[in-house]
Length: 130
Image (cartoon, rainbow, N blue to C red; front, side, top):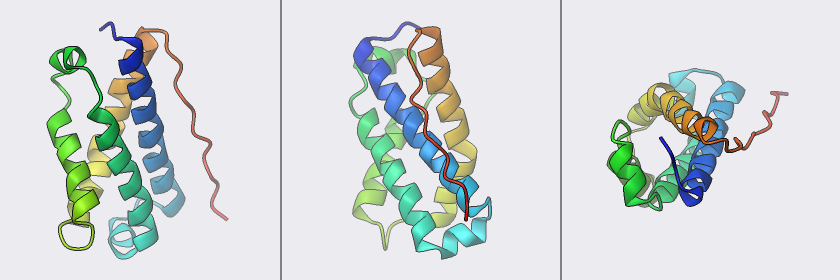
């Protein structure tokens, strides 16, 4: 799929935020209960999910029409749930499922399109656990 430069830049940022989520999982460990009980873990993941949802709002209609295999509407909606209902409306058990099941394929999808179109993938340096 050919993408515009603007859409490619948005995809670059989505990949970057996916990588930040995956790095956070790696840093804290892939442990559902730790995630559910740790506000620092939740906060870092949440801010990156919000960023992905906000950035996705700026993808072109042309791109969205071609990229129907990704649930862009739900991604944008999740941003609103996290941003406006952090303490009361967020089910962090569902967020855990999302970050472990949905973020890796979203990242791959976006990165594959960038590679197809010869765009750079913004690398996130992993932070080793102390």
